[in-house]
Length: 346
Image (cartoon, rainbow, N blue to C red):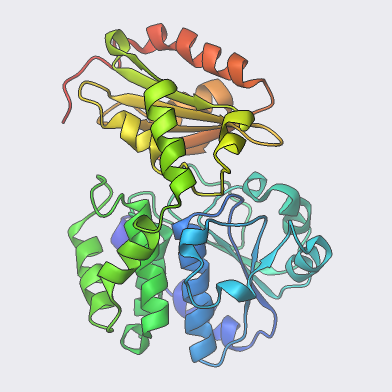
């Protein structure tokens, strides 16, 4: 189905009728929430509230401080802080939204509650290869972001003209962060038309950009400097670059959630590099972020070698192995992809 058609059938209208007749609506996003996950859920939360529809946002864990400015963020229920309440909300929901993820495993400890809910489930997501576990699915792999899809859904409802500054700001933030500030290949002319419509609500795009990208702590900048000067490894023969950070190294700089956001893209920006990996140690596993330019699929690399997922040029995975084991495995895999990675940058 073409991207522009996914909201064109009767399902969007049927969903709106269902929402207006439901009292327990829950909006969920993936663990390790980013700007698109938080933006898309809070966009609907704000829009619903303004239309007299009550809803609750539930996330598995916390999100970066640079998106704490979004209206309604202080109303979000975190499973990591209120596990019983979060599970109860998910299990007892009448309508449950699955936003910016397409597989139950992406919600961590909320998975059991998600898989056992009696709610009518609705997926709105733009990642590849969705798992069919919901009652109503809106999946568009070509969309720049889930937030772009949220705008299109609200537009389909005939309510785009009712967008408030709060709702528009959430949508814009998600589009901006997931599209690399409108520079990734997933950005289309429609993306820019939507951005223009959001700006016309009166929201200030420059303020949003500053809140997200220009509020760095000193510790974050020192961490980034350390990562680039001491932990960056470039493999020119494979057109690849790798950055790895241990938990001890992160703690040395008083690491906060979001401090390493975009670090993998910095590695990818090196001339001649077509594939980059950022690997870091968390308290429970080793996390990986993969980025690529052009034809090489970061998602296929992640899926085949680590059981991960994501987009063609941006993917992620997790492992129970040690940091050294994961880094060593990636380095040993590079020769297998030497021909696939040997192409000029677009």
